[in-house]
Amino acid sequence: MSAPSTAPDGYGHDHDHDHHASAGPHSTLRGYATGFVLAVILTVIPFWLVMGKVFANPGTAGFVLLGLGAVQIVVHMVYFLHMNTKAEGGWSMLALLFTVMLLVIMLSGSIWVMYHLNHNMMPGMMNQMMHHDTP
Image (tube, rainbow, N blue to C red; front, side, top):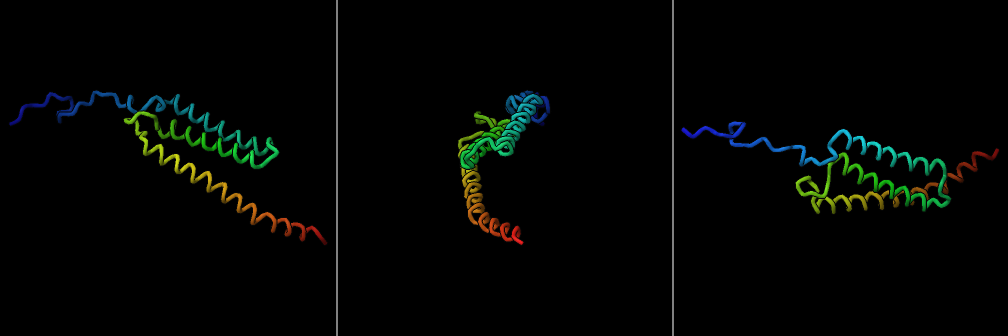
């Protein structure tokens, strides 16, 4: 027979370490509330910018909206996905590079699609609207 284990669970594992220390400071109710408030603010500002027609140039508005969208992605990653700079928290250089790559693909792809939709669809829609208005 083997000697009895002195570990608390009887299997040789020590479960006294703090699981919350590795999760980071944002895994509390206060952290989630902060992330939620930031996400709401970063959602309301673009709606206000577009609906209030704050920028005269649509290109400037598009770049500001893309910047706010990128900031919101970072807020979601930090406050809801709990990614941080510590290796034990799950944030490695590979994850950072992958996130940046996805961000660039999504933002540039969105601009490309919106530009081509606007360029290819809007002139035809304007002609159709003009034909419906004439008796």
